[in-house]
Length: 461
Image 1 (spheres, rainbow, N blue to C red):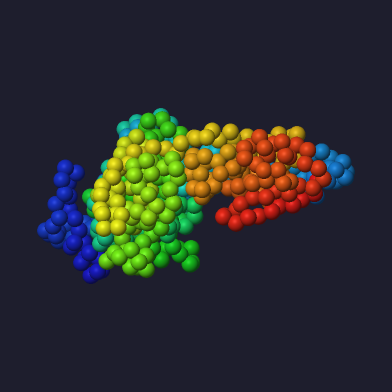
Image 2: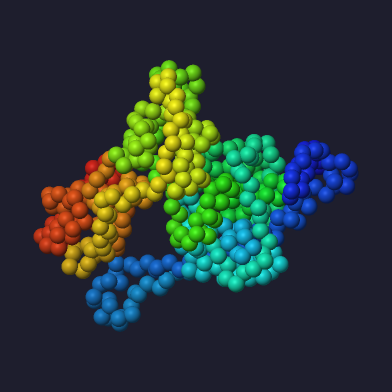
């Protein structure tokens, strides 16, 4: 109790027009705690119930003609499996734009959103990105909803008080308190999310995903996305997606984008270590060392080259490739970012155009038909857009597997495999794969690169 009161004595009391930092002036203010903030913010945090239909699995015995003839044509037909997902969301606009996590709603076939006053809305995902783990929903027939104001998350500081609002374990809306315990966390979140996060010790549990992390003014700092845990419950290490990135997602959704478009750097970078800094004659290990550049990279066009060190993007310090991507994504496609570049002892500021990954040369994405031995497999020619989409090395060329399909997966192929040759015939474009797999003979050998390592797959027909 004493600890709580001491924490409350540091509370920031503010109005919507302007903030004022002061200690509580009376016993009444102390006893109220966070109640006024929660009362203002909680109506904008919603519960999300999502239904996901997944295809059923079938045993190889079900494809045996003997058993099919014996038991009838319907024997062994796999039935779809329905999975229910529970999470939280935050209303961003009065006309029903809501943000949540992609892992909660990204693949849902039916989404139901329930507000604190028990109103229910059907919703659909209008923009989502699995890598960022963000999805923007639009509620049907929604008007005049309460919403949270997005705070400039670049001004969030370690030690600030924070509240997490969500629906943990499906027990109903719950509020937990803590502080901002870290900033610029990259590569530490679980699941598919990879990026730049705010760290908090405010308890976050299953069902809190997509909920709000707010400050003591009731403004949105970030969207709770994941935790680090050994037990499955909160151990005081939670991560939230910063509000500035959420704002860019909202902007693109309102402009009608159905997929998030992020600026393409066309570079590979390495976090500066003490050893690298010492070898370069630097006093402090700060910045990102450019280790590779694609010929079409906007950074290359702006004059940067391999070996340069990027220390700041738009005046904000960066120390990892994920931080660079975050800063450029917040600035948004179509604008420019100013990069502070260090080359030897020379420091300069370079303006870089923020553009999407180009479709040069054309991807020629192709799905193999029944005339080939791997029908249903989708392949594409590698270009910058495909490199960004599939997470390929900047130097890779040729043909990439976008989706192996059922037969390709059975043969051992995976998304992201780069096919070099089929039965010794070089594959430079998707049509080369189609030709090679239409009449390959009784044996098939596919030579490919997976994760930078050569792999050969062999199977009989």
